[in-house]
Amino acid sequence: MTADGTDELDRQDIARLCAGHDSALNSLMSRHAERLFNYLLRQLSNEAEASDLAQETFVRVYQNRARFNPAQKFSTWLYAIATNPLRDRFRWHKRHPQVSLDAENENGGAILDTIAEDEAASPGERIVAEERAIEVRRAVESLPEELRTALILSEYQDLSHAEIGAVLKCSAKAVETRLYRARAHLRKRLEKVLQIC
Image (cartoon, rainbow, N blue to C red):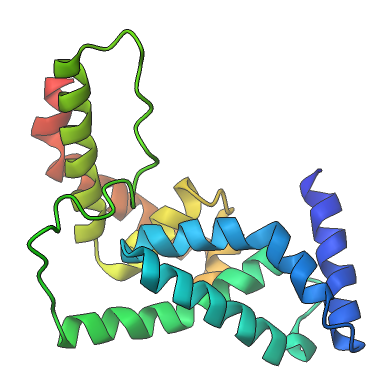
């Protein structure tokens, strides 16, 4: 289905939801839950937290259904709703740091998509690829929240600069600047890792 077709279905489902047809929320969830979960997982690197926050986001969609502006995309509104409590979680984690002894292995593919194992790749090549993926994940996690969120929305969620600006409540130009800074930070941090490639 095309993006325009999805947008129209989303508008219809929100209208139905506002009219008292609660089952319309199920349709919205079936179209958007997986991408929302992946966005939150990339941000939090914790499946349980991402799942909780995804559920909380859809509860907020239901509670705020009358506030939806049909002139905007539902997905943009959804990410904006999810990003606000996400910021609260980041602040909470800063005040309550936790260190896991299994941190390196926990949710190994959280920031990057799972590495596809190439049938022809040797075990050594796979190990090197996994080590690079871990370094890239750490580099993305080390970005300041405003840069990381913009980068994830752009690279993984395929949102335009204008849509990211709507989510982050800033201009498209500010998004462009954040993406530039995020990529520069990653290039600098991963310079040695990428040279090995």
